[in-house]
Image 1 (cartoon, one colour):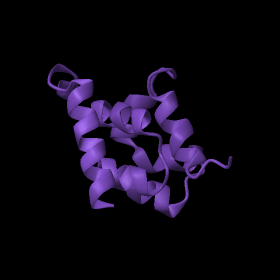
Image 2 (cartoon, one colour):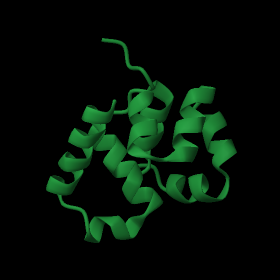
Image 3 (cartoon, one colour):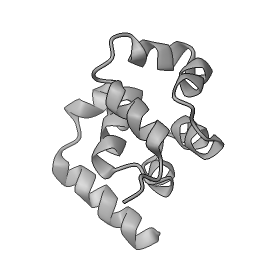
Length: 95
């Protein structure tokens, strides 16, 4: 199976593993995008940051949730897996 968004996937996976990456993404996103050789579609989706934008390029649902927590750290205090699954189901219905 071919990964649809390999650069975005590697970047999101690295956000919680690579020291300084989260800060670099917040302060110099274009440099980070270049480092991960992102396509224009991946860059656009990461800038948008929504579940649907990330889903449209093929980012795994769990990684979409992780990225949401990077964009809004307070989200972790309010979101349960039920909320996430509800959003995912809504997204599937709406295409």
